[in-house]
Length: 116
Image 1 (spheres, rainbow, N blue to C red):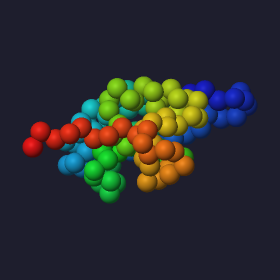
Image 2 (tube, one colour):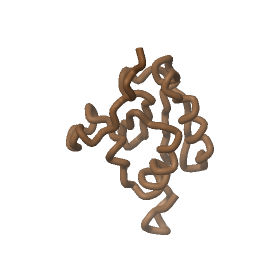
Image 3 (tube, helix red, strand yellow):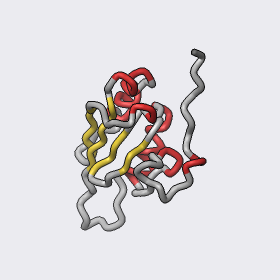
Image 4 (tube, one colour):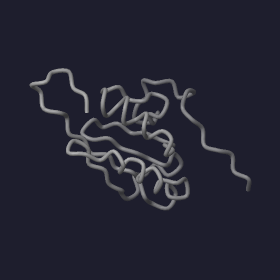
């Protein structure tokens, strides 16, 4: 993990990935596996129960930052790791608009249309 001052200890973070039914249908198990590949002394990764945002999954929370990511795919994980976890720049296009209203909700990914 990158940090600006070599005398400052690296920031420790915890990433929780919802593993409840709705998120699992959207491949949250694959998102969890992708984050687990980046686990380190400064990054703890775990599956979690429902985060109460079932229509926006897979949901990812970064703590202690208080960042909520929505509709995260396994392909998004390297960007979150590089931009946010290593360089302290949240990935704006994945921020959940309910928890981060300062960003334009029209820029957020939309759920795929159902064939049903």
